[in-house]
Image (cartoon, rainbow, N blue to C red; front, side, top):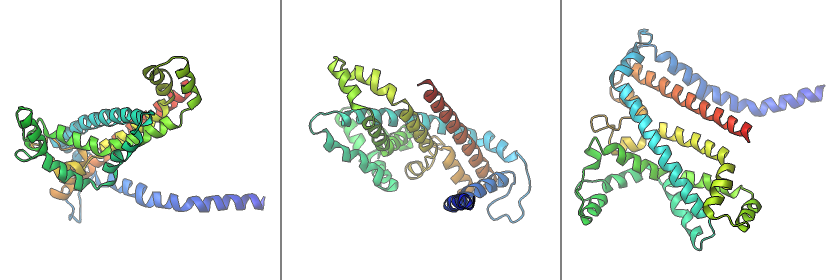
Length: 291
């Protein structure tokens, strides 16, 4: 009995640091965020007044609802582009074509280069007069555009950069999933006459459903937390066309010093992320039960 208690004590001793850090840096700040979202006042207000859900109503009635809509559009496009490009390139890298293995490094470079540095480079590429993209449009005899100052093009420009910045992550994840598949099954299908498309649709894709759903979770959370690209390229403009929920939190809390609405948006964004993640995890469980 004493040996059993000693084993349990040792197990709790190993787990305790992680639990304490999670409570100190995750649960307590989350509780403070929810509590502070119910109070009005600014950052330097020493006696905030309880306003209940007024911060949430004001946030949704003003720019908060628009920011949530922009976040949904951006996240949807981000998931589609990064997962689609990641899957296609992973299939290419997993093929046995000569020289393909040397192409792996360029897809990893955007992940290791600081986002601010690459955002400044892309900002110059989108420049209306001397930018590379407008020069290519001029060579193709197409009309030039001021991408970052146009309400209709700014979000597309930011989405293009954000997808380029993070699609390499999905390339790595999909490539790892393809490497984990049983090679003998795929080789047997190839011997039976199944082509590349048939092998993918009938064998590889069904066997990667769980990995795909996990990649979907990671990619969705990355899209919901987009901030740096927008801060460097557009700062939420023009006319709020690229103001996502997280940039709204920054603008209200650190520019306008209205911590009530900033905290309210933070709580809403947390709840949305939690609900979306729980839904995706539930879907993963259904896929596992169906297999």
